[in-house]
Figure 1 (tube, rainbow, N blue to C red):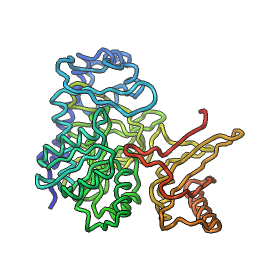
Figure 2: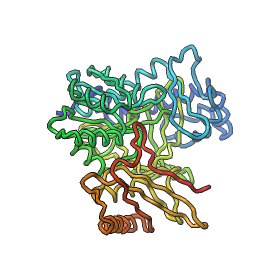
Figure 3: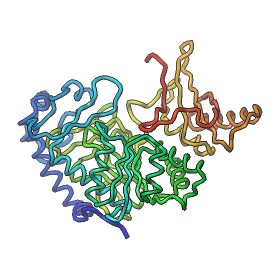
Figure 4: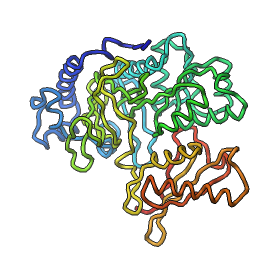
Length: 433
């Protein structure tokens, strides 16, 4: 039986959702106009005042906000509440430029935790469950968000944070953890380690996992589900909007329901900024309509995806977004070909390789090179060079078929690629571009 944390919201009519969005958008635009000079200048530059925004139909008139705006306005330029009313900051884990710092009132945190509670309930979580939160805590939003959501559901919460794999596994087994929250790459590593310890899926008490914060493929999902004996669910979010819980998967596992009472989603052409028709593939843009301290209007996520408005078997009425298909800003262009790491991962997993790999892009004599280092499992490992060459050629052919270009593939020994306890470092781009 499907469970809901807030059924009157999650299963509201489309008309009711639209009415909430219209009313909240109008109020939010007035809020930022009155309290954020940076926004007011951007609106004035387009000849807009709050009176021009009467509902969602007018959303397209508003200017976009990008990560560049957040860096320019750093640290306090986009804060819409007095600092005495703010109770927390969270920050992105970005490595270039100034970090994005997001601000929260207590009300913002309550609503964010409600969103995470919806996600935990959607995977079957109740106050009978033990939820192990193995996302990083601190400035990173993963740990605090799922921790708060777990408390709201009433789960017994184990705030392990990331790392210390031996302790993670000990707690899963000793405390009978039933729900695991972490990055998919770390879930795969935990599963791999437990398998090496001789544990079979029926000896692992977990029943569900909520995995996000990095891209992962459907093949990787199946691999994790088989190794841990669980159902693996996706969750999506950005620090700039609150954190995990902007959208989440339900029992259908066919896309993530966007919490539309808090966020309005648009799909735009990443080149022109034009809003695209329903069902189109393009860049995802979000407007936060309930955030008090750090409300972002038309924030360009750079994630490429599609929205699905068809009714869902779970009974939730909020629109679904597909798993991001890549990003408009980290898409690799190699010898003129658009390449997404997720395409490479799909080929590797289809050929039975674990999702532990690195993509190294370089430029030699003005020509781009693509080198994919792939870790073998202990069962695959061999010192037979003929066999290794055969397998490498198989992957080269698979990648050429998927990408339309030649890649060099190097099979490496088990555990020779450094494991990540946070977001996996998949791409090393050595080109000076």
